[in-house]
Image (cartoon, rainbow, N blue to C red):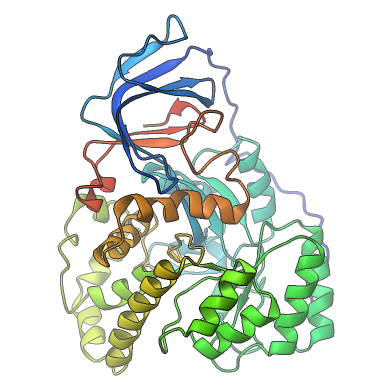
Length: 439
């Protein structure tokens, strides 16, 4: 049973003093701008940044309203917003091992920095954090931690002796009835999580009366609920119960019109996480084109590259008796994403990165964009799912997620145009957060 936690932790390992910097304006001149809204890109514009904010987007060659601004030539460059990963896991992974003991200030900070170095400005850690995560979340949001901005669902709800795995740690809540679920949800709400996570999968599976109690109580505290899901039947029941997010693709069968209609009526978000199926099939037996790309290799934890290239891993993949189901599930996931997209269901990008060694933090998000684009979705729309979509889901779209005057100057500068090839998002020239160049 969860008890209210009053913890005293020293976050000196992750906190640092933000030195005051001058307020000199910066102009990045003559770029192509993909603003994250899903609308058409704008060519030959200049971005005026003042303090931490976008002051103006102007046609190239305009007389700029700020004298003495630092000018940066952006000719040939493309600017897009920093991405939002609405389904990630912080602090679980270290090397090739998943363990709750890995959730330390140093490890979480290292991972937040890695996310930002790949152009991910915000991450939602979905349900596998430890108690210190709330303190780190607060430090991150106060600007006292480097790296991506940290949002947390705290401790998720699973089934006794069921999903998620015990390796995710003792903080996972596993109520045996609705009354216990209500009590635990009320205690969790005192810690002010940004979201609530429930796992509805596997055997034994959390009972509908239990997750209905969790969802209803979370909503009384104005907290949204995201569900790990696999089966269409569960998706129907969850949407009927009032869940706010389906945090994975439906993978057992194609979604029906009734589910799509209900999701649209209730503004339920869909997070496809296509890359988890891709990664499950990409290693050992085949070598995808990006397998030796330094952009991918840099994202791996120490030891993972050797693990993926080992004979043991290859034999494990060759002997996988579940491979046919996985191939079918991936095909269904792709088709269901296309149906959700065509129907206008709200979509946010998420990857489940950090939940397994093969789901590399930073690279996974770019791979997710590639998989969406391979299904014929225009690049500007794909990018909007990875930027505005996640920001809107988290309720921070008034300040970030799109590049418009008055919003935070959170963006990356690319050496190529992802409208021509979505893989251009990996050609990062520089990263800016809160109006400051990070790298």
